[in-house]
Image (cartoon, rainbow, N blue to C red):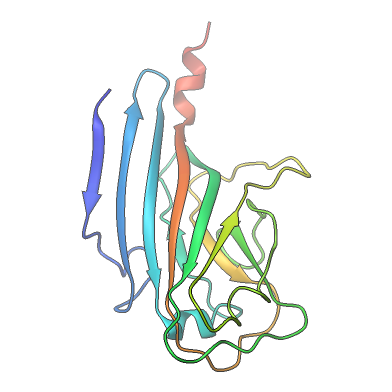
Length: 174
């Protein structure tokens, strides 16, 4: 198995603009057309404040005839000096494409995480209550399903575990 490693990706390509960063490393299982990897993403406080309106790309679209399978993520609130103020219906959720895309993670209650005045960790398991129909060549984004947070200035660091599958290898099954 070959180790696939990318660092210093073009953050504009990942939807992070000039304010984010991403690193990807993983292991390729080329016979089955599956790449299993971990990606790290840093969201600035400006991005966190705007999550309900603008969903940043957490995992880039894999390309034609490929799907991304979300396996889980850990979020780390790196507390700075002001807690975020949440609205009543704020949940964080990983989804395909954008805010209206299919959910790939369970909804995560933002209260008790972003509104704390210390460093916090939160695990986002893959969604298990319904079947997930993967979307070919779709990015995975992070969405605030409610309204934008009010104030706050802490970055959120995210580590995502996922797999990318090459759908064309399914035709080789005999």
